[in-house]
Image (tube, rainbow, N blue to C red; front, side):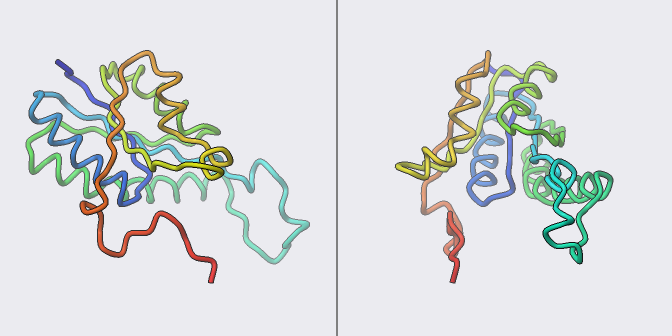
Length: 167
């Protein structure tokens, strides 16, 4: 059985619901959890945007790191609380990298995890071609099993949208 489970989150309702199911799974298995938030790089540090909008404040690396840390703690709060309530040992890590999928796999290896339990957005068509799938990239590169949890729509909040209207 699995003893150490990595659960990645991006803070979405979908990822949080999957994480709560992962906690239930970990409790039944007697496993502990490592929760990971992987943010993209600070694009203001990678590309010089100052010529585009000089009046805009672009975050320094230090400001960006602090914002990512604060965001990560907020995203993990309901997961952390659910693990404590369930009596499941919980630790958390935050990464900044070019590839969230690579960070997830590396975190699993670093922490000696024997399972990755993650959500899938279930993209299809052009959206999948253009945006790709973090879950698919994790499955393709992970040396350990990956359980992809497909969240039931009825388990999500009534106002949940997997897209942002432009109007």
